[in-house]
Length: 111
Image 1 (cartoon, rainbow, N blue to C red):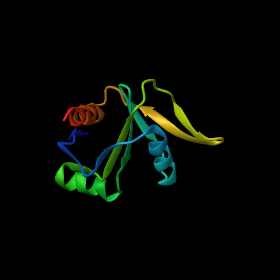
Image 2 (cartoon, rainbow, N blue to C red; image 1 turned 30 degrees about the vertical axis):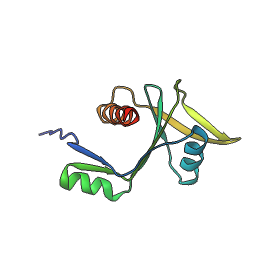
Image 3 (tube, one colour; image 1 turned 90 degrees about the horizontal axis):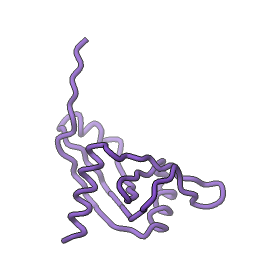
């Protein structure tokens, strides 16, 4: 068996916005986002279309149509939008793609 690991070479973020926590959560729940991502004190919500995976395979470039973020100091497994409605949160600390995305977010905030 031959196994080849081909990491994503480039991520293209078409929209990057800092949002208040409540706005990010409400947007994610109304757009049927099924999970949020937490890394080093930030909560991330990404909008990725199914065709993005086909594009990544063909061009080794992964498009994210929208990436929203907010400060979220402490990790927890889910966020309760309202009674009975929970958004799962995945701890992605240590994952290269998210580490690199967070670095870009921090740099964008410094500009």
